[in-house]
Image (cartoon, rainbow, N blue to C red; front, side, top):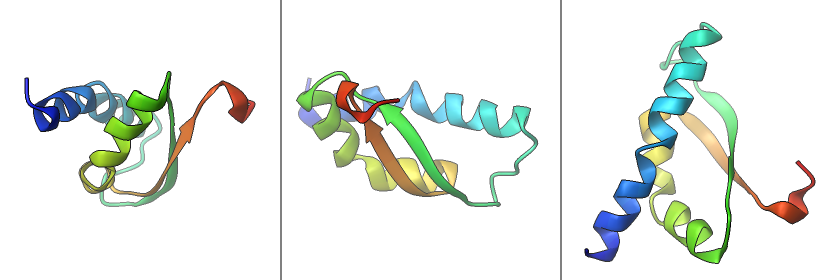
Length: 74
């Protein structure tokens, strides 16, 4: 599998999750969110998500993505 395909595959769980939370909270997609927080397990997760972060931002209409690891305190 090519690296880009792998990264796009990693996107699949995030998009529906963010959109379902928006729907639950009655926040329309055209209303931008300031930030979403995504947990990362390791450096490869971080690298993969950062590689497609612009796509995530545009798909769910969010201005910033914060990546959380164990040291983040969340």
